[in-house]
Image 1 (cartoon, rainbow, N blue to C red):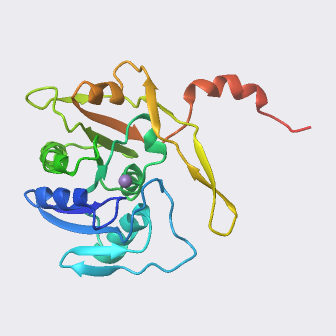
Image 2 (cartoon, helix red, strand yellow):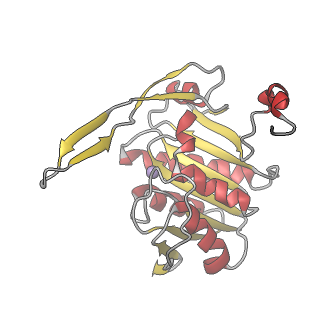
Image 3 (cartoon, rainbow, N blue to C red):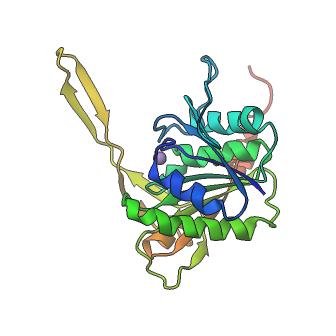
Amino acid sequence: MLILVTNDDGIQADGIKALAEALGELGEVVVVAPAVEQSGSSHAITMHAPLLPREVAPGWWSVNGTPSDCVYVGIHSVLKRKPDLLVSGINRGPNLGDDVTYSGTVAAAMEGTMQGVKSLAVSLNSYNPQGYAHAARVALHVARRIADFELPPRTLLNLNIPVEVGCDPVKIRITRQGRRNYSQNVVERLDPRGRKYVWLGGDPQGHEYVDGGDIEAVSEGCVSLTPLQLDLTAYGLMDNLKRLEGEID
Ligand code: MN
């Protein structure tokens, strides 16, 4: 089994090391990851600058681009064939609810899906590096269980792992995407040359309750596994919008 591993925290991050090491039990692991941190880069792709893949250790490639660049370069330039599985992570911090729309970790899995590869995003619901060993074991368990599982086209899996294990032994709950609220803060200051700069807050500030949601599962100490799809169509709105169809006058 050939496994492509990437992340958005950069190739030096503790999470990707723990993940690659754990997945080595399943097959051959090739890492293609951003040279520097790309958290919050979502599904950005570099189209107007060259990408420079560098093999920094055997099987470990750094790319001066985004997580999605790494998946693209990994499949089409480094491996030159489709891996059996793509795993992105382990992210430093959760990717729950609306986080997935910002997340480079999840977007790398989206890119894998678009390239026709079974893809899994993995995040640790903590900023404590001691959680990665536990999260890597959970990721390996899930990767092993989905190895023979046919994911429908244009779908991916989003795995979030709490560091404090509330359910003992570890329980996985299949969840839906929840709803996260973010702070609206901006910090405005002056730089050394007297120009105003703005630093975005945007920290998570609680959530709306969603029955069966990913945030609810993790806050109860369970591992959350959410199936996501690339199709963002709001099907429920289509009938209502039909009245806009037709000639433009
Ligand atoms: Mn990140």
